[in-house]
Length: 388
Image (cartoon, rainbow, N blue to C red; front, side, top):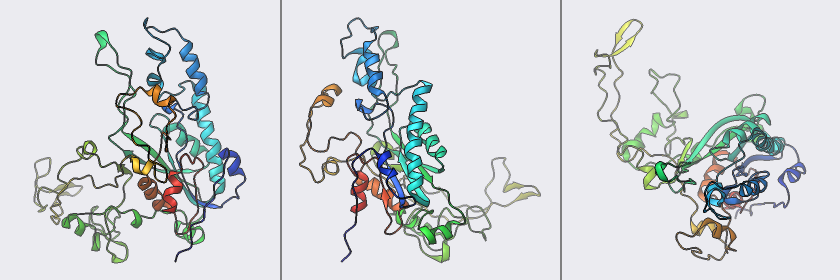
């Protein structure tokens, strides 16, 4: 029987709490901090947000019939906005710098930081993380089809024009604490610095693609030093792979997203090596003249090309797990202001992340028995995924 997983809960401002933690004491940080965009009018999402909202509400409206909650003063019009002034943008970046600096201190060398962000303020968050001392390694895009556009629709001669696109993705910043020496040496000493690729491979269903992910091509995405062409791949040590190499794209599996990918992922026909090139000749151009194209095996894959890890937005069962599920609490068409002012039951946090998504991110960067830190706990999505 495995011993129960140990965990600690700290109540307080994360900046002050993290200062009480020892340096180099955690392996990874996976978190979902405030985005600075006044998400759904929540006062915690952005410095001086309520002051800006009050100032905007005090301005005279260009719409004569505008009431205290209508026109440009409405919550719907405000949702998703952020302080565009240079001072406001610097304040959000400085806020990120403060918490990222503490994350850098408590992380072990080579420890990863994964942080969700908003599309419009990601750049300031990434810069704050980088200035804190992290190395920006990559960005994962979580793509979904269930976003709701926060647009102000125009009328009259400009009918059909709006002010915003439908939100369909959230970026996730992947950063790493610098370390001396090699990744291999750092993994031996601290267990950090690399990604757990095999734990996050994407399973395949068609036999042709499964063959492409096994044997001598099991580490698809890694070039062989003995390769005769740029597409010749091999597995480390000749081991078979269990699926597709994880990508920096995650989608929700919805019909609208899957439909964006080609229905057929395979090649139309095998490469024989004698096909004409774009210039009309047979073979490829090289410095010494013409040479034949490299013949290749025909895999004939079937199915959608959307072979990425997919995770839908948080389900009702996932959101209220461990609580009494209150069921639907608002009728279709309920105004956002009523949603905000109503005392709801269950888990009413507005940005609950799916347990499956958080579990995937944790598997990607956490060593066996490693310690995870989430400075912005919210409703506990990261911790829930860690203990399951």
